[in-house]
Length: 54
Image (cartoon, rainbow, N blue to C red):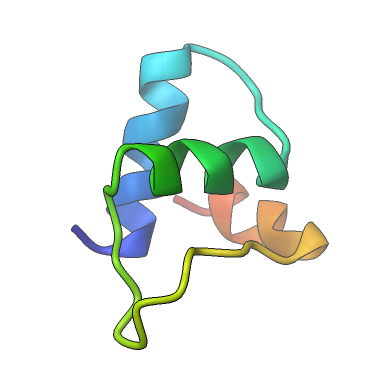
């Protein structure tokens, strides 16, 4: 799943706002998006900008 799709999926399931840490934790916990290098997803604090434009 693309990162954008994973973010939307997590936020719709939660039915509300989430911090970037909460989004990253949920995506990692459910393995919705896997980085190419195998490391867990980490969203930057300003990641909310991309969420607002989805």
